[in-house]
Length: 215
Image (tube, rainbow, N blue to C red; front, side, top):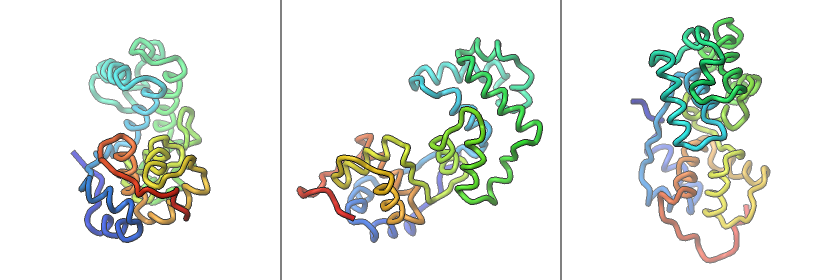
């Protein structure tokens, strides 16, 4: 099992840049987040799980992988029909998106191996061209498949909630999120782990009794 690589260097940097985030880091300690280096499998999993509950996603994914013989590859998906994919619990649209993704890989229209040498925004631009893949999904691939360290996803509701809880803001605007991104840079992905933990209630934090931070 692979985990996102970071340590004292990144944590000490963030603690020096932000006292409130430092308090959360001290309470939570190191947060391990698993990596999913096979971008193709990760994208298929993301498409399959869109707009359904975690429990339903697990059930669909189990039937899906059983259909493919336990190995999720472009070749295995190309060998089954859309009807077979729908029998796993996938919607018709999701079945089409997954078949199209497999075909693009097989045709050489997209090369995930080339992503390692590409900048974050270049990877996002390539991924959002794919049907069923939006910016948030692309940003999650950067973090959890490619291990990129400087992603703060404005489109992530839990990130916005974490920022609100940490700094006392009533609303997180794109401009405000960008200011925090610059503060956390070049380790915004690591900061995201602690914002998620804060949003999910995994770590206790009492914000200082004063108005929202002005930055």
